[in-house]
Length: 315
Image 1 (cartoon, rainbow, N blue to C red):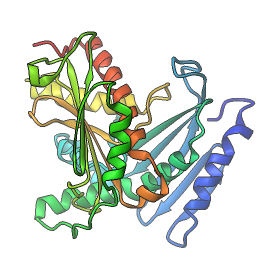
Image 2 (image 1 turned 90 degrees about the vertical axis):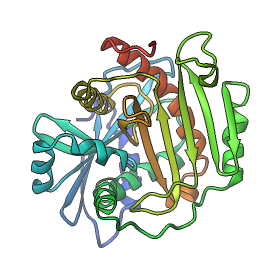
Image 3 (image 1 turned 120 degrees about the vertical axis):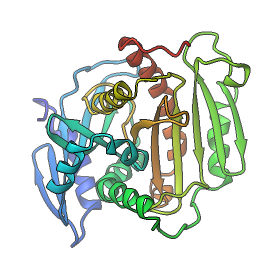
């Protein structure tokens, strides 16, 4: 659905995505406010949706794009009968999350574009890559981990200069540190929050690294946001993660959703993971900084959302 009177503003973005996907391997059907892409047995719909929040602290919203890749029927049935399988699969996410809508299961991504945005150089490659890689890379990676057969590990395209840019932005804004091919930051979730190293459990840990290749796609940039919230009830935890991924797909004024909520390092905390394939390094220059800024906003949103569910970072 496209908001009345806004069609002419939105269509050029879909035109750019369709042009970037022009390839004999893809069958593209262009509609008003939508794009349907078929690649083998996977169908992906890129569709504009009216935003429920036309204004936000960031500014007026221009449009929201939802990207949904449908799974084969056999895979959908398997997931519906074994819901805990989503835990492993979303840990292998690249640019979309295994998402539930009743009995419908799909790989979902979303991008909210604000009036002040001037970043098609970032937005178009992200949308295109989510169409190309989201479903196949997740399913392939899951199978590879289970069988022990993973792809060759190509070197990451991200180098020290990319991490310098992120460090320059966040230095002085929060507690952060640098490695040769890694950056780590702590985002405070409460006023006065210090650092986890000092025993503070009110910070979210953000890590980007170029030395953790994807099992299916090889080299790239692995991104992970770890929340300090602890959920010991496994059944409820699975439900909370599912709900977070559902909420990420809503047409709200939220940071772009190109990743998945899954189980974190402690096996009892929520984490949000993304993987940027090497192709995005040159196609979307500066994207490591964008992902980091979005993660800072996502940490605040997730903390507030979990609090509304009665889940606190305090122990």
